[in-house]
Length: 447
Image (cartoon, rainbow, N blue to C red; front, side):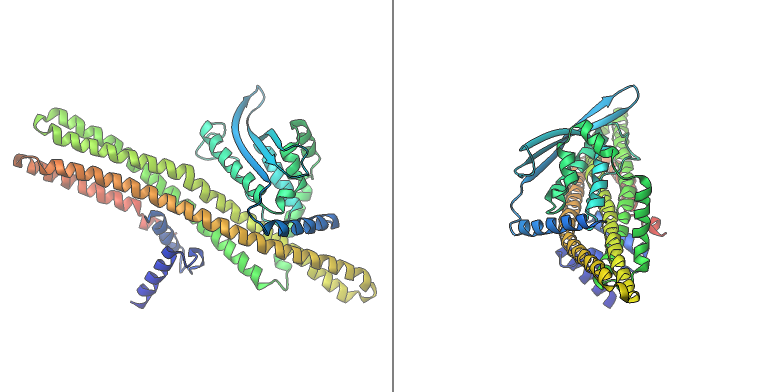
């Protein structure tokens, strides 16, 4: 009884918004997925350091007045280009700004998806202590990458990516972002060809991966961050996996309802005395099928992409934490080297001071970006699940109204039809129970 009371109290706190659901301890993976279903179904150089420090000072000035925004970026008007050798889609990137570093107040360029990949790679390399937002995945298992629906969804995701970059108080001043927004197509191609090779990127990845193992005095604050992001990514992966399963079941349910209605109308053609009753049932099932279809489309176009974005966002935060660990690892190694080589103390002291400053900047950047990311995450999570809940409530409300209309028709019918009506309800009731059970697949959650 005490456990049940504690669970009810925790649930109420989560609904009231006083507790972050991701901070609730989970006893097992099965319980974890059950909780998620319940929520878903409920209504490296000195120049880089100096540049980063200067950008940080600029960000502190900007954050004094967060309402000031001097860079607006829009991604729209996707176009398909078909050639004999290649076929691809470009997006218009429109920029309005009042910054003195730009020569003109407005720019309009067309960029391919691989251009956005280049931009994010450069931002990741030059702003290594900041969380760089993720890009949408290159391919989709559900859609053709050259289809209009896929291009429209990707355009929305790219627009959100550029908005997050433009709103960042430090990353928005990056020189590579300016090149991306202003350069002509051939100029951008030149910059892309001058980038670092794949061998250097692999070497950097190996260094950041092994840095966490070699750390000796990692701050508990960043250990907690790492554990939290790992748990958040796992939970969002569960949300995505279970949502896709529920989406498939709801889509199948809507398809069944679409085929069930015409069956009653065909039956009504052969039963002249029951034409009105059977026709009403067919119309009711048609009305129920439409909200099911709208609900599945809304989930597929809005909820699932947002959930996938935060799975990728969690990976981006993990990568930034690893880079912070690598910087601290360099600092710790430098301290050990200073202890071993006292005869070179002066030279090593400069390196220690340099890496200490980088660590402080990394810590400050990580804290600031983590707080900003948490605010955006809470807002987006609220919008995601509120929209999902409203969509489902509206669906079931329409279904309830449709069935109430049919019940009134059935009540007004004559007594000779009562036996047929009862048999119809006996046939419909098991199917409705089966649909409800399919919406909550408890046995499929055990891993």
